[in-house]
Amino acid sequence: MTDLDALVLARLQFAFTIAFHIIFPSFSIGLASLLAVLEGLWLTTRRQVFRNLYLFWVKIFALSFGMGVVSGVVMSYQLGTNWSVFASASAPVIGPLLAFEVLTAFFLEASFLGIMLFGWKKVGPGLHFTATVLVALGTLISAFWIISANSWMQAPAGFAIQPDGSLLATDWWAVVFNPTFPTRLAHMALAAFLTTALAVGGASAFVLLRDPEQPESRMALRMAIGMFAIVAPLQLVIGHASGEMVRVHQPLKLAAIEAYWKTRPDQAQSLVGLPDREAAKTHAEIAIPGVGNLIQGVPKDTVIQGLEDWPREDWPVVGLVYWSFRVMVGLGLAMIGLGVWGVICCLRPGGEPDRWFLRASVLMAPMGFVAVIAGWIVAEAGRQPWVITGVLRTRDAVSPVGAGQVSASLLGFMIVYAIVFSGGALYILRLMGRGPAPEELAPTPEDRAPGTPMAAASGEPGDDDGEDGRGGEERP
Amino acid sequence: MPDIIEGPPEKDDRLPPWPKRLMWFALLALGGSLATAIVAYGLRALLKL
Image 1 (cartoon, rainbow over the protein chains, first blue to last red):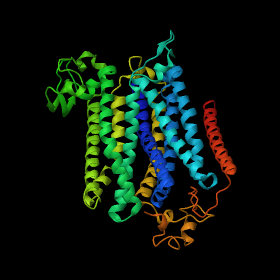
Image 2: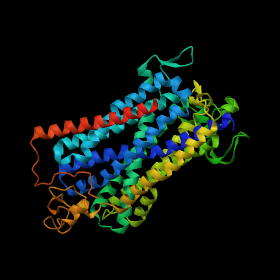
Image 3: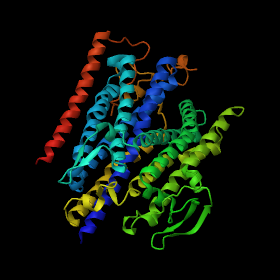
Image 4: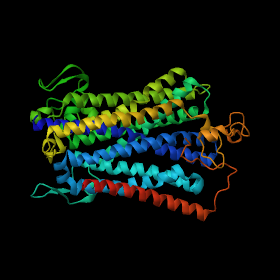
């Protein structure tokens, strides 16, 4: 095997592990905020439905958070094993950003997660709510640092190259708040909220197809509809702003996203087609002439660079970037459509979503994750052949290790991930599909945690709180 | 197996006095930080093996 094989395998390994990893934080960022909202609503209204929803989703949050942490640790280890040249050269800039993530976000999340999960009766409702809010804040701070580091790799700023080739930060403000960072952070945070709303909405719709009167699922679906009705159109606006940053700072990536082969004014907007890197053209293309510049937010006579402006060996894999972008945008438009449909359902007389909407919500439940992964493929594959744009090429960043070593670790990851994370993800799916279980809906016996088989067996549900055992006097 | 996630106090539950609640808040937060630090430094130590 050649060194090229080691490079390809190292890239495959990173792609495989990060595609798995991103599923969990994009879910836990949104779920942490949802839990804070649910607990806040429970504290202010005392409606049992919010308490029950909190108790149901907190279990899924804990599992998702745990798997996100474990799969994230693997990422940082890979920087040392497979990407040691990158780690060594960029450590003075990237290292502190990742260290800040651990110190300001991960410690915050990990510290207060303990109170959130184990301390409700010990600290009381006010302090418990504080802990939930701090965990939610921690997930967002974590996204802040990680997106800052990644955005710096997309459009580096505030650094100098030392004579030995290593990088040195000269302006930390410019490093952290690099040009593409604000829009990319907003884009990722909204993506996490949308992903969660779709998953929560889909899980609730799945339960409602079985039991249309289930009150917790009805409430959760309404909250989810409200979320994606607002956030999905907003994501379109923020995504466009992020695209404008790509046009300014990464024109090669834009050329790959839109399959602009020629440098010219008045570019056409390609809708679908089959980009052919060898022939430098798009086969079977459906395009709208004259609107490419308009969509990029520049006058018609502005020249937009095409791929021909760069040496062919510097081109990213055009088809992959082009189609990943279209999958992401297509799913985003479907999310807007689902939001509009959901609002129409809620505004109709009766105000209940019909079964077709419930089926569509179930179908859309995983699409947030698909869109997130597609978006990251656009960001990362579109940046190639650079690992740090214009500074360090991917082929120069890889560790001097053989293909055999990388294949062995890749195989190990695939086996472990297939067992551990697939098992965890399937367990989460099972919980979501089951919906809030009867024991979660019961009031908590004083000496037992809610949701336990012992609590369920103790006969409290229905004894004194109304016929369904859900604390009837507090229900709306 | 009993569920380890603790739910909210019910309306009839008597909460501990606030100094005790605050103490639990601080203890659990510090305990969480400490557990995280032990794992983090443990993993770091692995790199030196």
